[in-house]
Image (cartoon, rainbow, N blue to C red; front, side):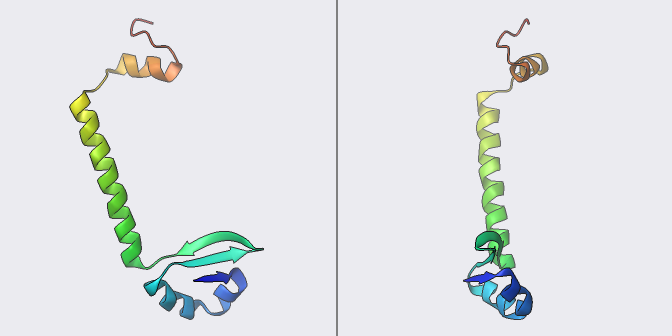
Length: 83
């Protein structure tokens, strides 16, 4: 579902109900500005993101961690642990 910001403000209740079934895309000056999602869809996306980062953390733990000095060297752009 797609609407303008003005139409959205005027008929908020309709779009709140519509968001239960599908995302509502809100445009302003013919440019996408926002998306209204149902709480269920929002929670599904958050759970999906949490799962992704959990998998990334598990993979990092299996690969091992680098120490504080090596981390700082990477941040500074040096690749030597003794820099």
